[in-house]
Length: 459
Image 1 (cartoon, helix red, strand yellow):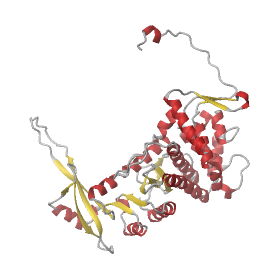
Image 2 (tube, rainbow, N blue to C red; image 1 turned 30 degrees about the vertical axis):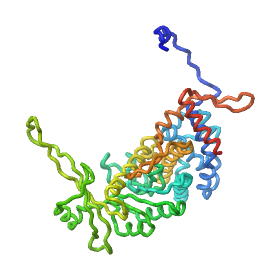
Image 3 (cartoon, helix red, strand yellow; image 1 turned 90 degrees about the vertical axis):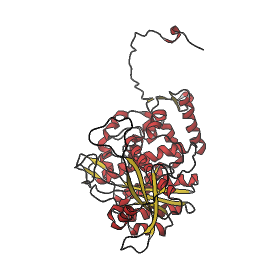
């Protein structure tokens, strides 16, 4: 029914008086109750305490509680440690963390700095365990692992940083960790923390082996796949993948090998994939390698910008040339599927981009290296928990594409934050029973209730 203008528009002149809640019952993050329920279902507090038990009990705020505060800090969308002052009096944040007041910034920094490498290693394993627990629950028949490094730069002099490859801010100090992500779930599995001046392949052999063995132990019947770029093209790494029965596709820096370059230049017949891609196959090995492997040489047609004066003809001639790349693989499927599989590495770039933008993965808050490592792991954990919350609510499942895109329709952590977490609420006790009144209506209320019902039912 159509409404009249008088029913819609009204004149407003008075500005309301502003008062502040002195009883500290109002919250700006009512959606944290969903994560409180999920923390209980995952027994996350106890598992975090186990990561730091060798350090002994602290008299005030322990390492596990501080790390959990960082996770909540990132879930709410904050970045710097100093941003903690913006929610210091929020009652629901304190309730989720199980404290009557939050630690200040200095306490957070000192607590992180007193951790050690053993604690970092345990937290790193916990991040991977939570991701693999979900993979086991979903009974994934195929698991695709992506490996790549990413620059975490800083303008301060943090311990362990170095000047290295940094296309965005040249000359700044940075870390260059190597990440392992699980494509089907869009989650982090592991991280190898490194200085910013190392090559992509530095420490990669042991790291890749460790990740594959962990996944194999948890998912012994799943088909394992791995995707890597040309920096990881090495005989020992390919041999390890083959020994563990992993189907792989690795970019090959064929421009460095004269034999392959001549093979491409002399090739006249290419097999067409579509209007953009064509290929041919061969078996080849570098001189010092022990055996040959399947090589797929691919060319991509691209438009070249014309330089010089522009002739405004009715039919302008479009110049085209080809861009080449090579793939080494042990997959037995068609070359078009192998190409789509390798190009699907962009899924990992999306995961890293989302974690940097919405979980502050690219921020380096402290001078101590161990503190920065724990901060990065907290960002990875916050990202995974955002996906875990949605996966527990049974999202729509897609078919498995050749590119191995994520199998579930998941919101980014930023969208999840805007729709669910950042909701005004009030804590009350009618008849002595704790109650959270959330400011949500329509679709937001249904979505909130949908997630909460699944969490409470699972518990």
